[in-house]
Structures are given as C-alpha cells and as structure tokens.
Image 1 (spheres, rainbow, N blue to C red):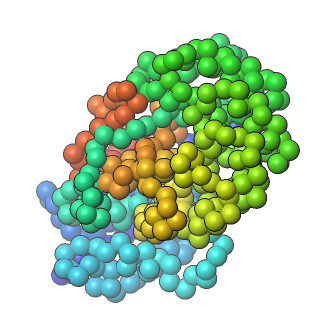
Image 2: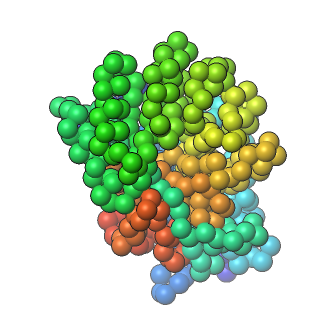
Length: 389
C-alpha cells in the first residue's frame, strides 16, 4: 500500500489573554491546531504531523475544514510523494493545497495553508527519522547550527500594569537567560511610552538590549515623532511603525531613524516580501525581517522568500521570524536565520521550547527530537495527542 495521508483534522483552541498591543487585544484570540495523519507506522503507531498557526491571527478552522483538508485526502496518493515514493513531498502537497486558487489575496488562506504545511513538514521529518532542522540543512547543503538566538517578547499593555510591574516582567526574562527583550509601544501617549521605555532601560542596564514594537499603529507623522524620540536610546530595533503594506512610510522612516528597524510579520507571501525589499527602504546591513512561515503559506513559501532575499543581496541571518513557535526554531537552526522570537509567559502551550531546553546567554540549543519536536513539550503534546486519538 503506498504512503498516503489518511486524514487532516482541525480543532480551534483559545489562546485568550487580557493583554493588548497598540492595535488589538487578545481576549478572544484563537489558534487552529491541525493533525495530518498518515498510514506510516512507527513503533506501532501511525505517524502524525502537527501544526498550528501563530498568535495574532485567529484560527482558520472554516477554511481548513471546508476547503483545504479535502484537497489532500482526496488527492491521488502517489501525486503527493517524493521521487523515492517513501515520503511525502512538501512541495507537491503545497501545490495540491493551492490547486484552483487565484493568485493574490494573501490574507486568511495563507494562515490556513501555513498551518497544514507545518504539520506536513513535521510528518516528513518524522518519517525520515530526523529533526526537521537537520533535514532542512541536508536538503540545502548547509551545516545545521543547533544553537539559536532567541529574544523575549512581552511588555504588553495590561489592566493595572504599572512601571514597577513592567520592570519586574523584564527582570524575569533576564533571570531566565535572555539578553534581548521586547515591549509594546503606541498604545499610550508618546510621553507615557517614553517613561515606560526609560523604566525598562533602567532595569535591564547593560545586561540586555531593548526592542520596541508599534504593531503597525502609526501614520507617517506619528512614526517620525516616535523615531525622533527613540533615536535617543540604544535600542535593538524599532518594529512595525506603520501599516505593513505602506512601504513608502517604511522607506521614509529610515531618513529619521538611523538605528535598526524590523518589520514583515504581517506580510504573507514571497511577493509581498519582495515588494518590501524593493520599495520599503529596508537596509540589509542593520534591519531585520520577521516573516512568519506559519502565517504565510508555510515553509515551502518561506524557502521561496529566502531565495528572493538572497537574489536581492540579503542574508538569511537578517531574518528573525515572528511567532515564537518551534517551527521557526527549526528553520533558524537548519537554514541559518538570525534567531527567533519567544513568548516565555504568553500563548501557552503553543509557545516556548521542549521541556528541559533553557535559555543561556540569549540562545537555546535544539534537542535531537524527530520532526519539529512537539513531542518534547508535554503540555502541548497532550493537546495534539487528543486531536490525533
């Protein structure tokens, strides 16, 4: 019997929190958890690949169940296999998912496809018996680098959260081994945000660097006003000042902010990423790109994005993906990215690292777990196992 995908299952899970950034609150935030079940048996159990979408975009259960899952379960099994016939071919699977889809409109469907794509890559690496990061390094003739830079994302606006609590949060990240921390701006006045920034900088001192994130809130005038304020401080980066598709705003901002800027988490295709590089004034010697494969059609598309960046003179080491999930950690270790976001206290159990993996000097070391490594995180794997049962 040829290898085939037996089922694609989805469940929508809450990851709600009373936090907010400059644009949205997370009181009703959800995620889609997906299981791609194969007929391959290992240790007496079918091999199952798992995936989920990143925080900040709601679960995509309707699209997954009504449109995309059936394209895999109804496909001719042989059409989804690699040349050996012994494993799935992620690019063929991706092509099946995107069959009969018009170009453009990179919105919610990119999240649905990215979620399934994650599960497919998890299954592919498990069938191969390798950690995904090592499989990726082999396929790209690279040397895998299991040690990956991670930074702690937090500093959200929260009811009743004063400066002392904000400082305590950031101190907690330093105590856990991080040396770069991130906080939100743009959800208060510029004067209040200055106070918040100065409070954090006083707390972390020379032990860490601070990045700030406006979540696309500002018009050009406000983005420039913040840039003039922020350039007084030694920040790691100034993130997503304006609307993610306002490339002219991003380009103009570089004239007022000489430090590092970061953006890209809300661009969901290699075409949109290319337009950012063409027209957004991003500087490959200092700026950072945050494309998140789980929101942007998955790893198959992310590899096209990396090829585009290379053609435009960018190194993959300038990419630090949004999302804080283990899929991007594997990509970072396997394909030489600059690191990955981390949410030490938020969006659990979907964020974070496998159990026992700690942060040392701002880095983690990837464990040698088959696939993406979800099975090494007990609270997350309990959710996944329940879906696959």
